[in-house]
Length: 180
DNA sequence: CCCTGATTCGC
DNA sequence: GCGAATCAGG
Image 1: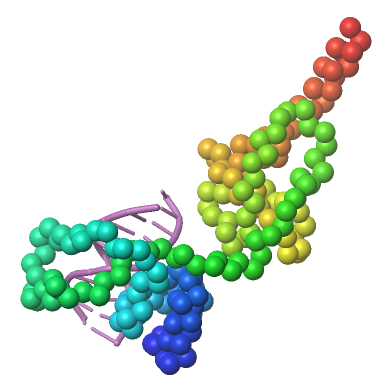
Image 2: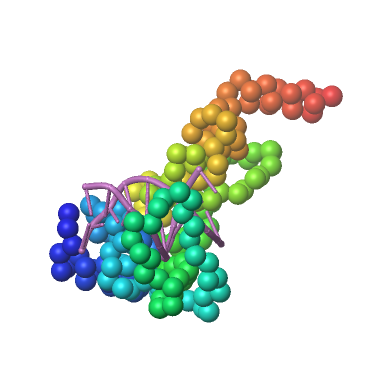
């Protein structure tokens, strides 16, 4: 992959819109975020907005000897820092309430916490408990941190792995209690 | 740990 | 010119 005019244009556009380097890299495809950042700098469009630039701070390379005369010091239009302060235009972030998929009246408590993530946002350590109807646009996964093992967070694991026997035992127990 | 941009420098 | 590796920071 190389930087064709179109790709450069798209890069400029997306960068000006405030997308992160990695997001742009994904969008373009075939490049890493490093490549994007490198290109951005070469094009001279670094720094999308920045305050005063507080730290004069030079970088300190421990051992590597400077093979070139440093061309820095006095003249540097440097507008450093800044991290994507952009209007973040995310397509599918809405979705308000997502009633848990009819899980019979549980007496245990809550921990409603779901992060609720899309399949794209789902990471290795995230709970894969499905929320909603797969195939619908608002389908999500729980997304909470998974437990010590397994694909679910502790809360959903307790639901998923609750054996029928436990429920029966629980029911019998209640009966006995009611009788007494 | 996830992520961000910034910088250097071998290629 | 390019971008991986690295750095610095959130």
